[in-house]
Image (cartoon, rainbow, N blue to C red; front, top):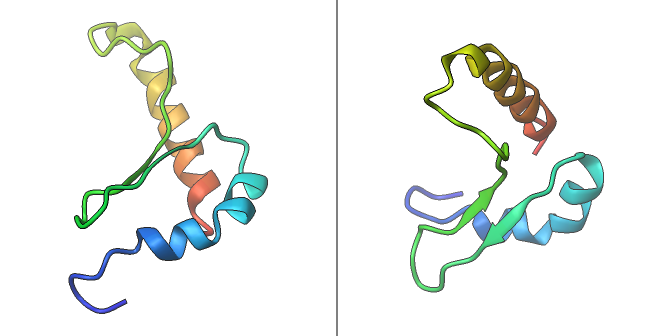
Length: 71
């Protein structure tokens, strides 16, 4: 990818493989003519004010990033 070029089209071309390869419910949000397209995954429900669950949220984030690490 050149600087300034969106990587979203390259990832979207691999969408089927990505979704099959990871166990995540991904939300694909293309945005025409901008670089703000997103691929999102959420931990739901999550309450950032609930400090007692922060270790659980951290573990989820690490595991989720690991699932996506190969793409």
